[in-house]
View 1: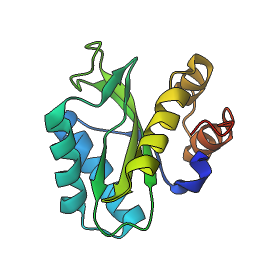
View 2: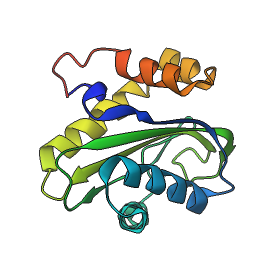
View 3: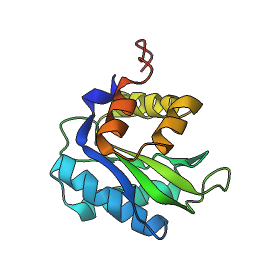
View 4: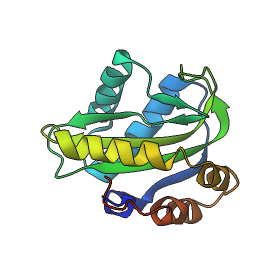
Length: 155
């Protein structure tokens, strides 16, 4: 699975402001609603339910909030780069500034896990993360995310 299959240029936002984790989840929920056609509250509820199981803050300033939502035709994604890092209850207790949201259909077990693994693997690439942090244009962020490291059929 390539990120260009699930991430659109319109679902990439740069230098968004959020005061805390709750506000950030609202921001990505609104973006998720735009790319899925679902109600923002439904997306937010899904993300909050997943966060209640444990933080999706991976460390190194990266979070991957995700969840399953009825009525989606496939996995969809959105990316938000924050102007200032915020606390996110990450595993390393570091604030988050790069957020990659994934939403999958309710019955999408393998596809959801493949997408999650692909994004997590990609965002462990220091060179890509440094490039994302030094870029301010959404189009360039999209290009970096979708052109980076081919999946080699791994996910």
